[in-house]
Length: 124
Image (cartoon, rainbow, N blue to C red; front, side, top):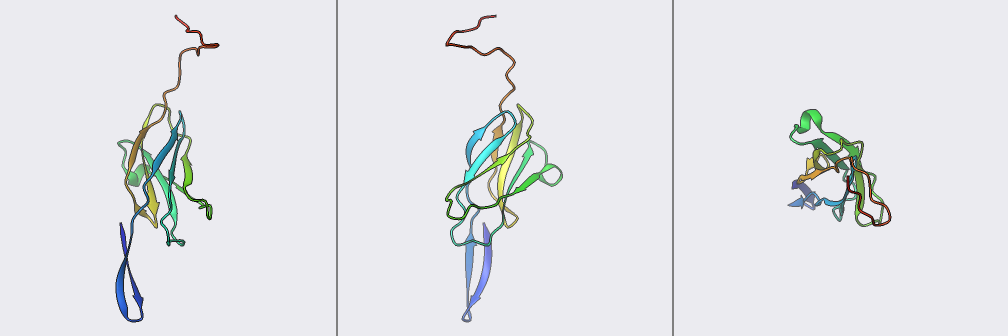
């Protein structure tokens, strides 16, 4: 939550903006894709996706991607990529450098077994 103060005709009031909630779209071996709905009426805000491996700290290990919003696009999708397979990550949204709630997610494990074809089961 970010509080701002705006002066308008000598009357002071507070504007309270909350960081939008991130929703998981997909997690693969090396990517995590999330989506969010930008805050209405906050067209000048800068949105960033921030992620790190769990339990590393944000200051030393956090990586960031600036999000270019699609105007009139509703929910916005963004992907954290080049991740380590089978690892746990914390992902959060930054709005004007104010962090939102964290999602803790796992990337997929690399498959080591042969895949079944034609609906058959492979028994080794």
